[in-house]
Image 1: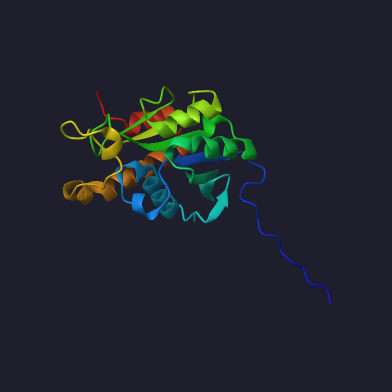
Image 2: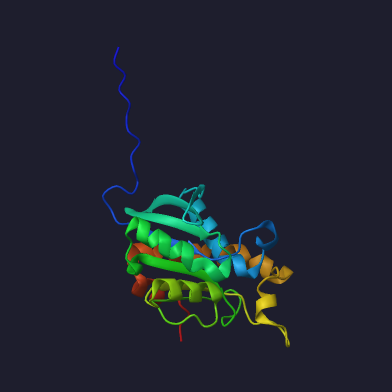
Length: 204
């Protein structure tokens, strides 16, 4: 008797995927902090497109799925924030992805809480994860989704501030904020960075 086994389709076969990265720190103690809002956005996007992040590769937790007809890799580096470039650049090389198909979601203290801003490149503005990616990649030319968490009050250090949780008031709006971030990533894949910026960036 001959048994025929149907090969499971490879989502990445025959196409160059997009790499969508959320920055954060691994570990339960950091899970609900401002610094991990990039992780939260990627997790929400995974829910929206029914993509489970369960595979460990290149010092990251990843999931492989589709947005529309575009193939995507969702990734959460597990190296701690200031070494994020190790995971991101390793994934780019492994899947042969051009940096024009990369976008990184991260917290930003220079934007008020609840505001998002997409940009096609630029410096790190002190964000250690972005700085690590720039260093390892040797280029600033990759897209960002900046998720505003606001400035720390008084003389409080930003490094300490982003490692704390959200206020009760902010928690009420956090799900909507994270959802908009996830929709911004979808727009980047489907419509490109320029159209995504026009749609999601605050009007001047």
